[in-house]
Image (cartoon, rainbow, N blue to C red; front, side, top):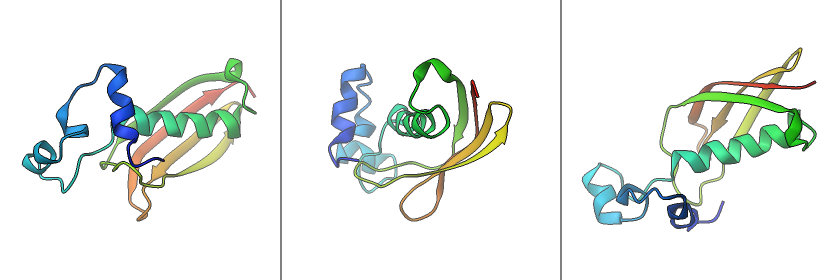
Amino acid sequence: MRPDQALTYRLSGDRNPLHSDPWFAALAGFDRPILHGLCTYGFTGRALLHTMCGSDPAKFRSMEGRFASPVFPGEELTIEMWNEGAGECIFQTRGEDGRVVLVGGRHTFDA
């Protein structure tokens, strides 16, 4: 993901300075701005779409998970998926240092 990815996501209407202002991020205890959760969720959803749904959005039914750790712009994400059969998959997303950033993931799709 691009290092300036968080600035692009300001276009979603989320103007929280935690995602763009280093000074504000430092006040919140971070050494730099963090990525929007919507972006992390979107990158994960895209991986699920391509892997479990054969890139067909009509097959994508639902996705849920819980944010467990912040992600920083430019960080590489790894999405781990396990197909449970019958149109259900469990997943988690990891940051580049191996920490889980999205946990308890469940995805349903048309098999």
